[in-house]
Length: 529
Ligand SMILES: Cc1cc2nc3c(=O)[nH]c(=O)nc-3n(C[C@H](O)[C@H](O)[C@H](O)COP(=O)(O)OP(=O)(O)OC[C@H]3O[C@@H](n4cnc5c(N)ncnc54)[C@H](O)[C@@H]3O)c2cc1C
Ligand SMILES: *[C@@H]1O[C@H](CO)[C@@H](O)[C@H](O)[C@H]1NC(C)=O
Ligand SMILES: *[C@@H]1O[C@H](CO)[C@@H](O)[C@H](O)[C@H]1NC(C)=O
Ligand SMILES: *[C@@H]1O[C@H](CO)[C@@H](O)[C@H](O)[C@H]1NC(C)=O
Ligand SMILES: *[C@@H]1O[C@H](CO)[C@@H](O)[C@H](O)[C@H]1NC(C)=O
Image (cartoon, rainbow, N blue to C red; front, side, top):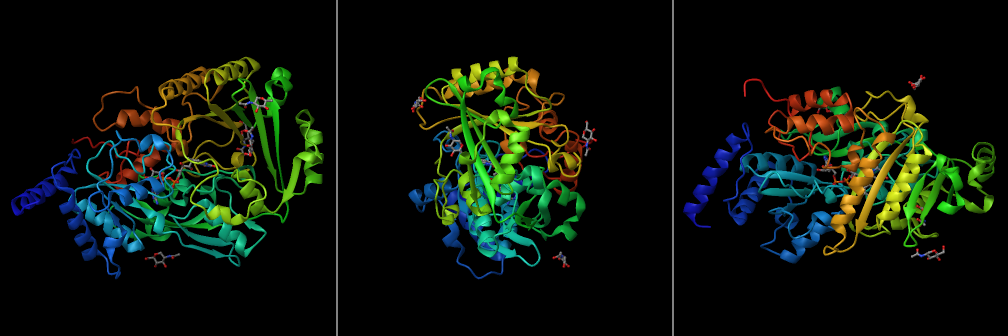
């Protein structure tokens, strides 16, 4: 770019910065190389850490294959990597907390939008694709992954770029009787996961990961690094369930470890539709999957924090229909149960938890969620199974609630799906090739299945889990410039009445709406505008 062009781009940048207050102008005229240089220079000016920043910059111009590799590394849904999807102008991987602060200061100054990614498991790719703002840059936190476990104190500080597999592994290295109640698949990122709630196989005993957070470090829209004391209880409340990408960039969580016994028991029993006449067993559901045989198999997976003798007694008394026998039960340490639940073959060394990939690999997927307040009647189950058989590859997961989940009030955190919920439903479909002709059909089938389940699940609002991000929600609410009307719809789905408090906090901490994506918490429109 020549000098005149440069001047032009500077001028444009200035305009776009002002425009931020009003309507988020799109800037498309700046050449990316000059923008990168400006960005790097700005970062240097705003950090005092001596690090050759150019080493953690990835641009398509300098090295396209490396850029793609980094972009793809932590992008879990291949649907958002296709050629038609917008790509970041460059990727920056901060190696120090102050780099995160500088990224915010500099993207504001240069008028570029910023996407933040921890584990990259967002269902709608919101952490690495922006379809609202162009250009956008990707801040990838994968180099901020320190984990400090303090067994004496029963706590750990975990940086956002760490995966939950790494966290479990680091805990297990120090103790056999400590654990943490977060998700099941080992590659999920701590950063995005906890801020949306985060559940796993211990949710009935200990609640969500977000319920077990003691402190956090977050960089706000002004580039300030805050902890619980300095951010205040409102913001600390909002980030424990209000969803990622709305309030700031969380750089680390301080979590409370929970006690686990030295021996836990896991089982997993498969029943076919034919083996469960009248859906007797399914009334205590867990997981359902369709195989190529066009029948439905139910996969009942369980984990018990205790020995198998005790589990057998409980099951014989409370759930004899399942026909669980000692042969189905495996006793193991908590960390081995993590490996088992994450789908790794048994036995696997616990080091598999450090691997950057899951045993299932990556695919193109679409999923939706529901919460049930009462058992689905047999009529509803029939319909659900009919749909399952129609869709080629689909799965329904049923995640039982109750226990600790019912004891925490709806408003204690932004996550409102508590007492009165008997289970959560996850509908999913996936495919493995970009050119798969049935992809559209699959997307439609999942949406149809969701429509047909309406009579059997929560209503007014129909509840959904923000960590199962679903851009279909609110889609039919058209117009409204600032999307505030649409947001009322999905806001109620994800957060019920807590949405209003989230909007209030957002309006206070990020009035310019710097942190934004298709479903970020909106700023309350001001009457003057
Ligand atoms: C294979 C798979 C298995 C899953 N299993 C579970 C499970 O067992 N339990 C469960 O509860 N959920 C599960 N999820 C859902 C998961 O919790 C969410 O997708 C979660 O948001 C992922 O966090 P992430 O850091 O990996 O994702 P990212 O895609 O990096 O981030 C998700 C969102 O948070 C924002 N964000 C990322 N990092 C930060 C940060 N540091 N500060 C602020 N905002 C940030 C992003 O911009 C994006 O909007 C699963 C998802 C997948 C794909
Ligand atoms: C939080 O930050 C404040 C101000 O920076 C500091 O004084 C305080 O010690 C910090 N609190 C904790 C618990 O680290
Ligand atoms: C169909 O079922 C049979 C027996 O239950 C099983 O062996 C086979 O692997 C199944 N086929 C597919 C494609 O799942
Ligand atoms: C059932 O679930 C277990 C644990 O998640 C998994 O290893 C197994 O492959 C599943 N079986 C089927 C048929 O889906
Ligand atoms: C949960 O809800 C039920 C019925 O709606 C009520 O009886 C019970 O007291 C509630 N429990 C808690 C802990 O709020």
